[in-house]
Image (spheres, rainbow, N blue to C red):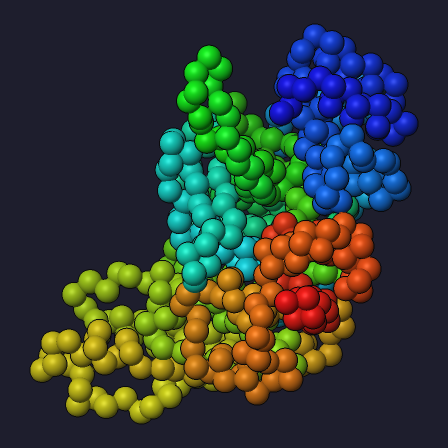
Length: 558
């Protein structure tokens, strides 16, 4: 329990060499006055220390300090300390009045803050395909934003991602959404917000080299990548001086994204009510922001707060580690997706994203991009196209026009029905033709040549198959025969596994053999942190070589 002063005192002693004496004294004062729970940094320290002890399979009192732990503690605690004890840090954060900022407003706090110059944005605008996030959770959080899948639970906007077996993968919620500066927040859960999320991750992937880097990010950068025209142009194509309405659209959505939190861990225990035999089931939920912010510049227009104009931002550890570094899980998306209108062309956006996700996640299994073959009903379900109304003929025409548009814009090479349609089975003489015949038909869609060339030539792109590496995260609507066949024909056939490799299996075997994470990871031949994160479910789709080592170890010990 966090109220245990003995444990807190030990934790403070453990990290005393790591922090300024001023901070240690603050913590000790809070401890003496029983105000531990009033300090965000002390609460986070408790979480981190307990997490490290849990990883090693020992108690907090048995934990000693190493360089590895030192880095981990600083990573989580330093940003909170900077905010909580701004007078104790060497480089206090600047503060901003609520006003429109210029491009030189924010200066680097340290060497890890990256500012993207105009010419780099222009270079990105010249590319037809850009590298973006592609984990299972990232895809579905973006999907929830675009389709408004958040629901109100206990007066909180909440979204849960579930696997095809019904197990919860991750949940997210929007913090304090009713008190945000703008009205009608639910209306911002749309494809435009999904664009902003994509653009932030695109900038982070393309302009940072480690998952500890911070990125200076502004609404002007979003508008440029969305190909919105400003009233002034500089640096050979970089647009500025945008209309206020355009800025508002971006700032409101940046404000919303800064409020999203992801639940990272649930802890369950039983507690006996004092003075009685009644037992309560207690669940502790730990969460962290989807994006961490170091400095925020908000905007006021005519005295009314509009939203975030610019901030220094970093994805949380789970998301950042999937965007940069050796374990990144990324794919390429067509820049045209960002240009489509979020009102009249939202289905174009969704279908193109779905296709790019499919191509990215299947590439690693075949080492090449191949055509996608799937049922029309599955596609419409993925793009959330449920407005059939009383005009099924128009739905068919719209669906075909969307694919034709994607082909024209270079997002697909070609497409067609797998089997030639039997027009005699459709029309007013067959009342159920739409659901019983047309929706059940399959189409094939080929990736564009440019995308194939990018995947074949680019080095270091993190590509993992979310469909086949962990059967607990295969999407319920993505089980087409073409995907299954492609897996069978590859050199890594998941169907040949006799023992299913899961985080639970790995942890159970390790604990049964009474091995620490360090001992087990050495035996398996992987870094200790890789095993730890997999057991905790933080990495659901490990690299191919890592997964093979896990598989070999599980089969050997089963």
